[in-house]
Image (cartoon, rainbow, N blue to C red; front, side, top):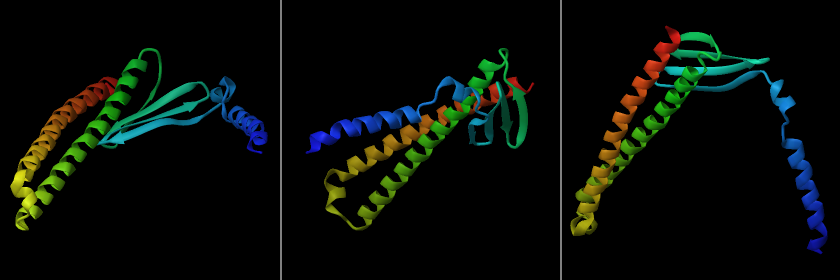
Length: 160
């Protein structure tokens, strides 16, 4: 009985997929915000109106509107990637520091309770976990500094 419904389901999937796809005409007519990002003071918003793209780039509330052209297209893309990189590295830093705090709190709790786990080798695991978390956080802080310098460089090139 189920075999009778398989062709019907396949036809329904085909109709749904064809209704959900966009052709080039649909995307050409779209106007509005294409993408945006904001992290640690740096921000950008890409808007499309007819066939032109305008970018709002900013740092700490100082917004500059730039029309995309062949001359500045690469620099705008680099700024967008720098802001995205800052967001990713900042998230990595927060997660690694959170992991370190969790390991430290659990280790302290087990130490106060005189648990056998911490005495038999759990201390080595806790210390190694803490060291790994601190190493990742330390590495992420250098990456964050580099990403912030990169965003600053591209922002200054765009606004000056």
